[in-house]
Length: 86
Image 1 (cartoon, rainbow, N blue to C red):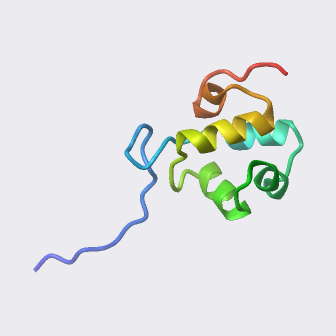
Image 2: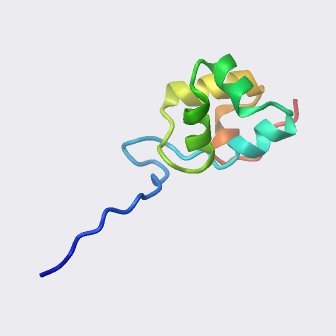
């Protein structure tokens, strides 16, 4: 009999659950903003920001827009485009 094991898997880019934000941590750190400061400014929890930075869970369009507004970048910059200089 086969045994099933639950594995935490990272959400793939463009999956129904949302988009990965591979540049989020790099851009946030360049701007010297903590996860807590970003969370407060964007209206999300620190846990949500941490999960997005580590690839667990995907971001919805509204989330990407809120984060990009706070960080001063284009939404595509968070998804993996080359960051614009602000």
